[in-house]
Image (cartoon, rainbow, N blue to C red; front, top):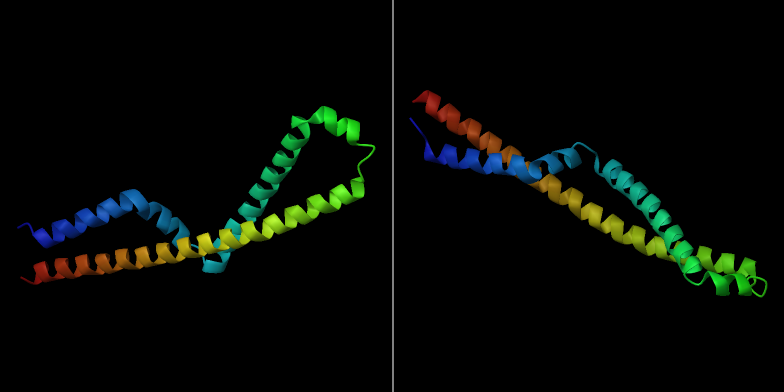
Length: 132
């Protein structure tokens, strides 16, 4: 005999597994520090590549003027300014990334906990049915 509660529960669980469940299981397989550390490492690499590309594009945008003024420019001061800008921007970006991935990890853990509770509930419904 069909049990409506069990069917509804199984439908919700199948929907979860199909949509966000895969991502959450992948996130949940890490310890919090490992997951956040890996994501921050990816963020540092992506930010560095983006920063280099932006600086390169700014130089190439006005390359003629840059080449004319290269002898007038204090290259050490320009390098220091670029490094300071990079580090300040990196601190802001890493802080935001940390907060985002910390939140994402916690939400995935909560979601997985709810999923496992539903599994227990489903198991209980099966046991109740087998007793009858």
